[in-house]
Image 1 (spheres, rainbow, N blue to C red):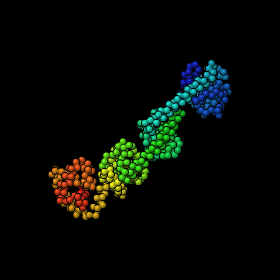
Image 2: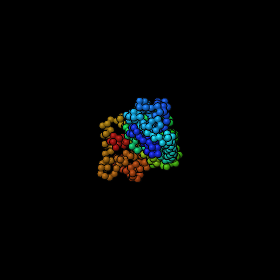
Image 3: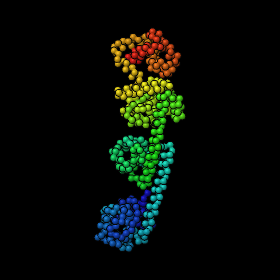
Image 4: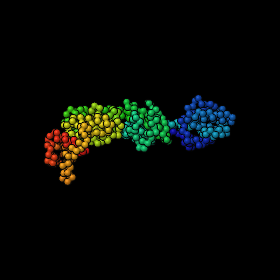
Length: 488
């Protein structure tokens, strides 16, 4: 911390005495400058403690002299007595009190060089402390960046180092990382964010001074640092270090994410081409597992930016052994925990999803085709989600007279409903699931949670009660039509 006038006065060997504007003693001293000029403004930068014996000053000239020092921005005036003046001119003291410029009386026994040395020692100590703080801060940020903390860890560490709060904003102004209690400030920075194209912008948010600084990345990002006091030199160096580390980390992370997404797309292509064993083996080696089959395949259609936002969200939420997602053409494809994927898609505007029937791993191409068709239907209908079974059924039902279809459905399904109402089974639900899975016993029984022999017995009961042969494709189509009409 820089030496203040009060701290200098507290050094008793100097024997300094406050003669004017005692309330201003907390001013920091930037340097010391002795001069006998009556107008030294051209040689000052501001913040100096000016030393004089008042050789050219008297009661008449002192007021103007004090006002010129105020205009120059000096921190204070040290007036040496016992040489040109036995005491400080009263007009000088009065004017200094009036304008708030601290005046220190320097006794005859105290040479100006002693004051200069005291200030010089303090400045050197302050610069050293600033250097140590900068180096320590840079080391801590670097360790955090190369460790497990990532960008979020760097943001939180920076907030502690500057004793403030930090936000990391993406190209849209949305918060991607934040230190504790920082998020509420994001909305108030949006106008400043919009004005900032590159470099640094200093603004105010409540009682905080906020520094907005762009990151050196392909995708525009901004670091916002809020502190109650303006950042000193050490704070500025530490923030610059954080900007460099975050720029490097985000750029490397983006390249890694892009590479993984290309790999995911390649795995989708392998599955679509029937290379199931190679694709699943690669999934296990990369993500530790494969979603358990049978799979429902989800296809999500929409603008490229929205699909990328969905992929970003899934990167953070979806576990490899629970769900897999990738891209296939203009679709994001997912299998396994499709509920999570569909939920994320619904939060992002402009996306439409299609869900296939349950399929085995080898039947993934069929499931992919169904999901894409259902997604296109959802897009056309502006619906968030369409199931393939519903889409396929609606196409034919629209051509059938509704009253005739309802009468046919009631007649065909009546024996099954009567059987289910007696509590002797779940024939309607079992028939629906079996047909949804194209007569695949293992997939349908797994979906129903029963043994496949139980399901076979139920289908034999359906054939017995209705007098229909379920091995006939036409009969299966009739049952499917009847179930769709009834909502089964």
